[in-house]
Image 1 (cartoon, helix red, strand yellow):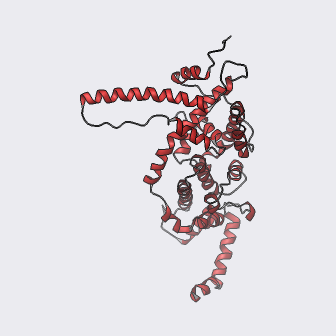
Image 2 (spheres, one colour):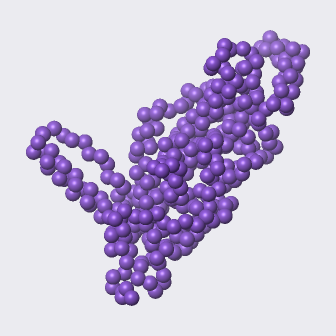
Image 3 (cartoon, helix red, strand yellow):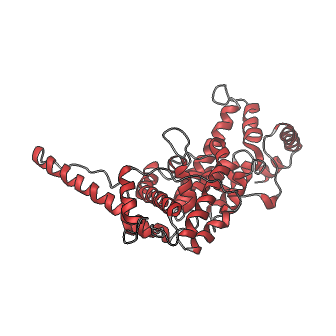
Length: 350
């Protein structure tokens, strides 16, 4: 231990630290923040998740520093989709941390060139940055954290169990959005509710069940071997009501993500569910996403006559201005079911 102390207190070490600090001051990409504005890996994983503070930093191009926002984005997406699954949040944050550090090492040329101390210093202290090493890497447990990474098989099992529930919840918001656009106090449409949405899913599942029976019947005639069935598209009524009951103000964000197109065939919700959401790639979409979520929440929840839903959502959605959008089209099957279930047929349609 005395040798280590001597090493840290040596004139040579002091000279190295002075030189590295000079390099950081001149070339480092990191922005040095006051301690009160920092968010560490540990804070993102333990205790009450600071959703509002994280969203504010993600939506503000001037806040934070390189790498930090990608880890925060990973933490937020995991909390948004799986608020009670800290193992998923931990796993996604560690992967985001590793990816950022890997990119820094590539930028320094450590993968293409032979190792030299200059490249190692550049990767660690200029491209990764001292702030990231302190707030994220060290707070995560350093290299010990990599031993805590769950296998992809474990995480995939959790995701498969919850993914259909999330997509069902987002689809229920679509039905509620259509209902909110049509509902009037004395109109011919019922007040939008989760119960009405669940009736649409019940009818869809009923059709899928009939199709399954037909497939099984044909299979038994042609082959005695057991066939594997794909799961129902949407979860049952009890699971839908459970996620709505446990909603912590995120339902509007999940719905807006399902409506925000990334490519011709992909939406932001697909990116979130595949653990691909990062500030580097999707930061430009965050203000629009938050604005769409605020608009949806302020339109739909009051029509549902549930002040709790709007109050919970407003905790962090009021940081963005509303971005109006029309409810995406329903399928022909859904449209027919919507009109049958949401409409008051005992009243005149005139």
